[in-house]
Each structure stands twice: as C-alpha cells, then as structure tokens.
Length: 239
Image 1 (cartoon, rainbow, N blue to C red):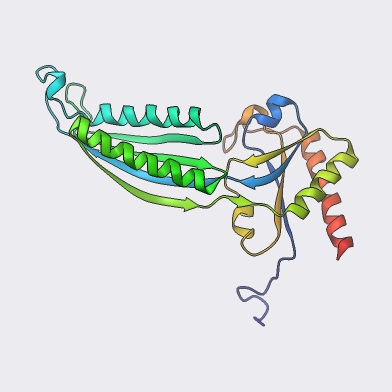
Image 2 (image 1 turned 90 degrees about the vertical axis):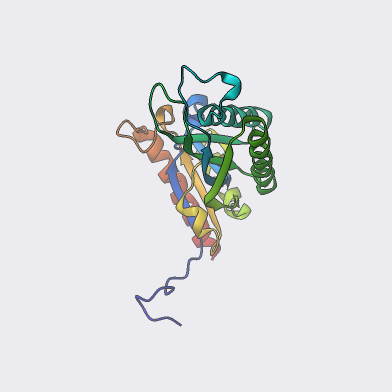
C-alpha cells in the first residue's frame, strides 16, 4: 500500500459532484435540479486552410483560392450538421487570418473546432464526415486543409445506482427535476475512470458561466446542497 501523502493513498468509494449547470436549460424551464446521467464526448481540433493571397479588386472570383471563403463554408457546414443531428454541438471559437488585410484575399486561415456529442459512435461519425468534407473543399476550392487533434475525451456514462439515488432524493424533497446530459467537462469526467460517479446540477441564470455575471440563486444552491447531503447519507448508510 502507498504511504500517506503519496499518490494513490486515497481510495475513492463514490464521487458525487454538485455544480451549476453552466447552461440555460434548468433556468429557462424553471427546474430546480438537474440529475446528470452522462457527459458529452469532446473533440477539439485546429484547422489550417492554405489558399493563395491576391488583390481583392483585381482577382476575379473564379480564379481565387480564398481560404476565408472555405473557412466560412466549414462553419456553415458545422451548423447544418448540428441541425440534422440534434444531439451534436459544434463551435468555431477562434479564427486567425493571414495576411489579415482589408484588400487582400486570405492566403491562410487557422481556427479551432469544438465538437461534442454524448454518443461516441455519433461523435466519430461526425469527425469522419468532416474529414470527407475537407477533401471535397480541396477539390472544389483549390486549397489545402490540414487538421490537428488537440483534445479528445470519450463520452462518460455516470453510475446508474448513484443517479437513481439522486433522483429519489430529489423526489423526497419535492423539487422539480430533469434528467440531463452535461454539456461541459467536469472533474467527474476524470474521476469516473476510477470510482462510481454522478453529478447534480443547479440552475445558472441565463446559462452564463466562467464570467463575472455568473449567478445562481441562494435557494437553488441550498436545494442542491440538501440533495447532495441526502445522497451522501444514503450511500454511507448502504455501506
């Protein structure tokens, strides 16, 4: 056995994480508690499009290799895929143009894509479809597209026993609740690899998070803390 203070000396029996939703669903639907059943898979990639810089006024449209246009097509494609598959979300969060001048067709665009889905097969399918779309764009628009995987986490399914105990605790308290998927990553995502894990959500007003304007009502925090307490008591009693 490892000594006290050494990595691995703590053995986790159960892990229950109480957290603000970081999204607008509970607040919008006026629901007190989120009983979190699973957590989305997350795929981040950095994409570089290599086109050709040319004068914006003198280069006809049909002779352009416009990296900026291709970036726009990819952005639109991602939204269309998300609309087709309602469980998928996709976001381009950063974008950089070169040479970044008002009168020059972009020669290079570098941006990031955040892909998420609670089902790993669906997430893989979306990633592969995107790769095929890159190949099509290279043919139709005369550009080169490079993609690099930055981060990838498989979806997580939380422990059904703990999820059921959370649901029972919420019902006994008489709170409104919703079974849901966590759209954001959390510590529970990592702890679930080594211990039975689940999460409890309380509403975030307006879905705002990681921002000075983030706010959750005191009563909602109290409700979440009481559910957490009830769950911990139940798990301790069972042991």
